[in-house]
Image (tube, rainbow, N blue to C red; front, top):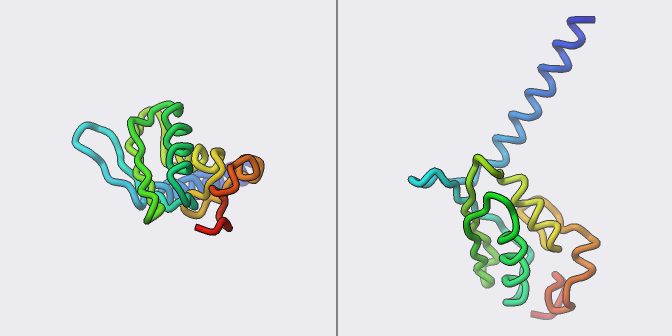
Length: 122
């Protein structure tokens, strides 16, 4: 039984390490102790920029965010003691947009203005 518990613990820790490595692969540590990450989003217009940046402004630990609409790249600066890249991606997803490999939350996506949807004619 103890061997089984050790095996399960090892597997859980391995999975957590793999998630952590994936989550921080595109991050940069800043001199002030913050971390900056770049995420590819599904944003298509200035309204999308406003929606995403406003949503992230309310997330604990996020210092700033800036979406470049033309490239769809979102730059987020956060305090790693208070949040992490997984929580950032989740917040973007819950605002209705894709964040790298994380798909948009479908309920939030459906609430977006028609010009903000991926299939809009931009």
